[in-house]
Amino acid sequence: MARKKKQHGGVSIENRRARYDYQLGETIEVGIKLVGTEVKSLRDGRASLVEGYVRAQEHPLELTLHSVTIDEYPPAGGRQHKPTRVRTLLAHKREIQRLVKEVAQRGVTLVPIKLYFKGPWAKLVVAVGTGKRKSDKRQAIAERQSKRDIQRAMSRRV
Image (cartoon, rainbow, N blue to C red; front, side):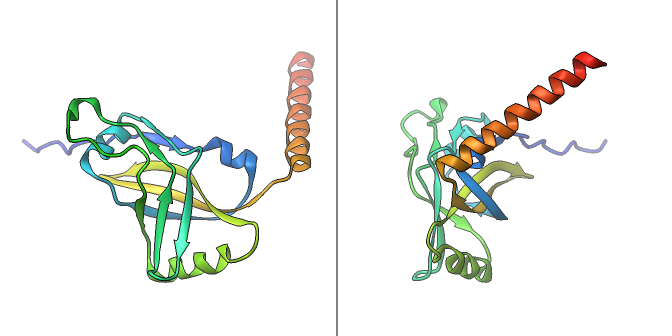
């Protein structure tokens, strides 16, 4: 009899606030270096990407994830991780160099968009974003509201 493959969690944590605060451009999928209790906590869906940002450094060449909260895993007892520690991201050298050049422009930042598992590995989607102004945010809200009103009118009509 064939042995069943172990199913890995289909947990996906998204940063919906980023789409409101930033005009998002190019995205890149990177790996994330975690400790055991962080993995267990993520599989339970206990994390927040809202305050997070990614820093790309040229010397030494690396990507780091800052201010992302991964809650402690209660069954671990005394062997806990720090909830908001700086985490290393894993990407190819040429990708990191390209991101360093893009972030060097004024007003451009790297924003974590989505954290999920791909097989046994934790992956993070990072987007290049430029900050929106208040007027841009108001315009986006007005467009969304008008689309809702049109949909409501169409549903009543039919």
